[in-house]
Image 1: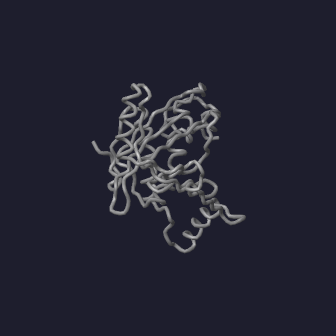
Image 2 (image 1 turned 90 degrees about the vertical axis):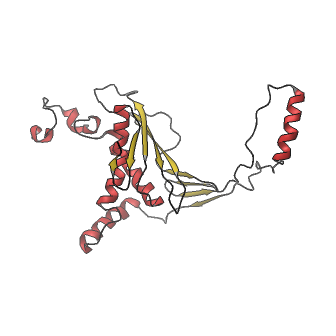
Image 3 (image 1 turned 180 degrees about the horizontal axis):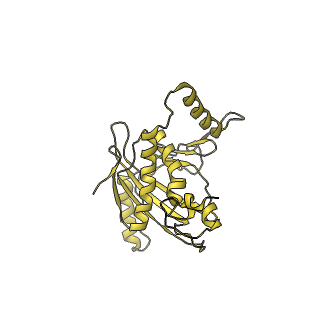
Length: 240
């Protein structure tokens, strides 16, 4: 194989099969888990929310397990602040990736938590409508009994006793599954081939792709430079 051509503008090093086949593990050739995995989730989020991207990015993580010479983190978590628009409120997007079998309960997918319920998207779609909190709650166990009673009296005057929600009658879930035989991967490829044949634009054009890649790569900048990054999602540029 042409090792020099593989290296390109990267630092010249002796031939190493591990670097060749596991190129994602090295900053010389790839963009780590942020550029490899986060970018797909930004694509889905931006499509679902009609968003151009976040305005602030922070990431943390580290090489927690794979001490094999790689120089990108195997655990990475990112927080992304999205601005409010005329059609929706602002929100914070949380991403995490774990390249270790760390007993993570959830696999890939999205969870949208809103004021009227929670929408989970994985192999299907689950909508859970749980009533919003009607009171802020309290902790008074360490106070004298007389103080507790007086506090509860005033608290209940402001926040009347709410109905018991433990019965599940107000927490019904609706589940939706794709038709039998449906493949999102197949539809993804079909959309691309259709665009080639018809010369019509794909759903995710170059600008859409850049707006997904931008915040994904900002996770790397935030992690390696240990800073919070400000981003202009409309102009697609860093804010100094």
